[in-house]
Length: 516
Image (tube, rainbow, N blue to C red; front, side):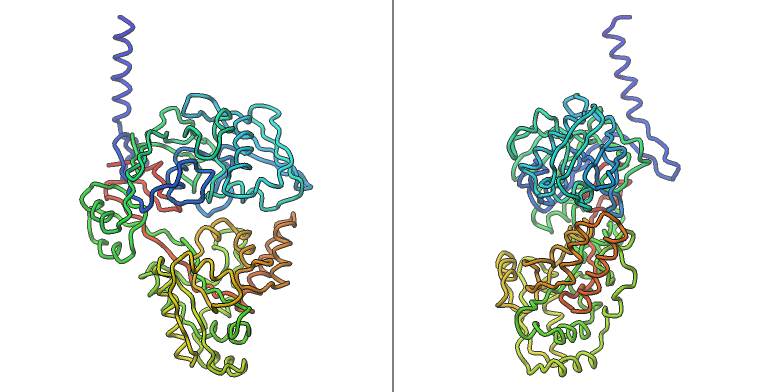
C-alpha cells in the first residue's frame, strides 16, 4: 500500500473519530465540530491581553493565552500553567512547578518563556504587581523562581488577576513593545485574524495540552476542551441588533443581554439565558469632606433610611441580590454577619432622629451621577426620592462618565456618587480596601482604622491576621457609613438553545462548549 493511500486512510479515520459524540454520563453528549459566533458590545483596543484592562480584550485573550496561576469558579487562586508552588517562610521567594504546554507555533513552553513573559509584563502590563520583583531564575525548564524585595501577601492574587492578565507568551516575542507581538499562546484556541470594526476569529488548537490536574472547567482554569472548530467574535454595539442576531441564529452567544430582554425571552425555546450572579457591587460613595456628608450622623441617617431592595430592583431591572459583605461568600475574606445590623435597615424614624442629632437644617445633598450607565442613574434617582421622604433636600446632577470620574476625585462639588464596582471585589480584598485607603481614598478623607487595616492586609504573612484586618475594614466602613453597599448586581449572558455546556462567568468561556 502506498504512503499516500495510508495517509488518506488515516485522514478518513481521524475524521470519523472527530464526528463521534462523546458520552458525558448525562442526557447530553459532547460533540466536536461546528462554529460559534459570539456578539460582544465593544471592539477590543488590542489583542495583546497583558497590556489592557478592557473586558472586550479579555473575552478574546483568555481563549488564546494561559497564565501561571489563575482563578477558579469562586475567584480563588488555582494553578493554570503551574501545577504547584511553594512560598518561603519569609514570604520573599515563590517557586513554581510548571506543567507541559505547547505554544500555537508548535514550540514547547519552558520556564524561560514564563520568565520572559513576566519581564515583559513589568514593562507593558496593565498592573504594577511586578514592581517588588527583585529577581527571577529558571533552575530547570519546569521551575520558575520569583524573589521579591519585600513580602507581598497578595502577590498570588495579583499574579492570577484576569483584569490585565499576566499571560505566558513565547520568549522570542517578549522583547516586543505593546501591541507588537504575534498572538501565540498555549490556550485551547489559536488566533486567526482581527478585522477592526468587524470581528476576531479563533480556531481550535489541535495540539493543545490539557491541565490534567483538573477534572473539567473551573473558573479560568481547569481541564479545558475545545469542541468547536472556530469561534468568531463580532463587534455589535447596538443591543437590539445583538438580540435580533441571536433570535435569527446569526449569533450563537451574547456577551451580555439586558435583563428586561432576558425576561421577555425566557419562554423562547430557541434561546437559553444564563444569569451571572454576582457580577458587581452597587455602592453609594459619600464625600466625607464636604457638608452635609462630612457629618457621620448624616451619613448614618442616609444608611438607615434607604431601601436597598427598591434601589436594586429598579436599577438592575431584577438581576440582583441583597448582601451586606464587602467580599463574596465562598472566598477566604468573607466576614459572615459582621456589620449586618447596619444593612437594609429601612428605618425612617431612626434616620430622622439621626438627622436631628446631626443638626441638619435642610442643606442640599448633591448626588452626582452619569449618563453612561443606567444603573448608576437609576440608583441616584431612587435613593434621592427615598431621602426626600425623610425631609432631605436632594439635587441629582447628571454628567458624562469622564466628568463623573474626574469630579469625584475632588473634595468639593459633590456629596454622593453611585458606582458599580465590578472586577475589584472579584479580585479579592486588596483592590477593594486600597480604593478607600490612603491620601486618595474615594470618600475624600483618610481614616486611620482603614489605613491600618490596609497596611496589615498588604504586609502580614499570616492569613488569619489578614482576614482580621479585612474585618476591621468592613466594620469601620459600615459603622462610619463612608460608603453604602446597596447590593450585588447580576448580568445575563445568552446562547442559542443548541449551544450546550455553557456556564456564565466573568467572560463568556467558549471552551467545554459544543453545538448540538
